[in-house]
Image (tube, rainbow, N blue to C red; front, side, top):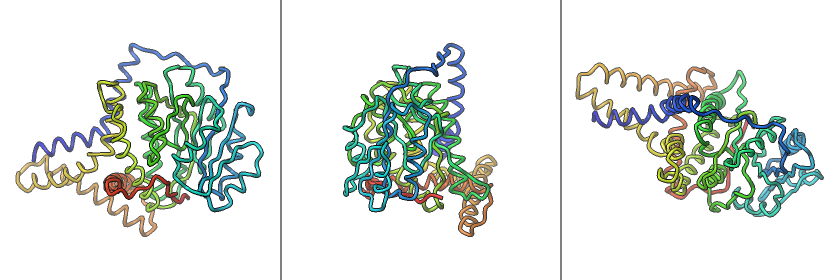
Length: 388
């Protein structure tokens, strides 16, 4: 029981807190011996293709087009492609009113990965930029992304995801906003050490020549596309000055649905990215990948349960102040989470309870996602989460 307690506790602490401290320390050491050369902001701009999969986005698609057309980048070097496969609303009709974009549509819906694969013959840009239909990019986003390709070792560049959180935010908004702020910090440090370990579909880019089709049933295509490039030995850069803004999920139920899908995709990707997990291929990248992704998507949520149970058994069997304090702290944390759930259901906003509630929600989603994956209940076709 004692061994199980300490193994569980140390892995949990490392996964959610310790890895950030280790990263920070390694970066400090790296800065003593290595200084990266500044990127040239006046480079000759390459041609880019912005690829957007839009399924039933009639309410927002025109605003997305205007946002994309208005980005600060030479018009003649910017190609915009929308793929609307399976859309049954007016999304395609609204897009066809614009002369400056390419619209691809088929009545059947086979998932985002199939839509991306179908669009590749139409891509003209040497840099391919992926962004979601329900996100809006900052004006300099493209310029900030493409500058990293001055480094021949960079094969992909991830932008930053930002969640709009207002004063009346519920747990899904405030929790997701806090989570992405922490994630953005880790991504910044990951890149400074060596490379990012994936990309979010809200905004990322790749060298078009490095694109390779991933399996048609891929659940989180953005992550897999970027990681397959990393497995070839290229770096996934990170640029916080290129960001995509979106609102949080409409409510906690919608956020949970999204997180479960991502978790199912996470465990699927772990089984398929064998080269990334092989330390003999690239030990630094494998260290980052396992620390930042694999632990979160596999054992750590289960260890939270094991830690609570084992700690309770230890308290029952031994008279130890230390183990009693840890057990009480766990009970307090989960009580706050339950209170967060209760007040959320009553539409009462107590922000101090958002973090424990969202933390438990995320870890429950991982367990549920793993179960869903092994039951083969997760489709590759994205079931849209409602947004605020």
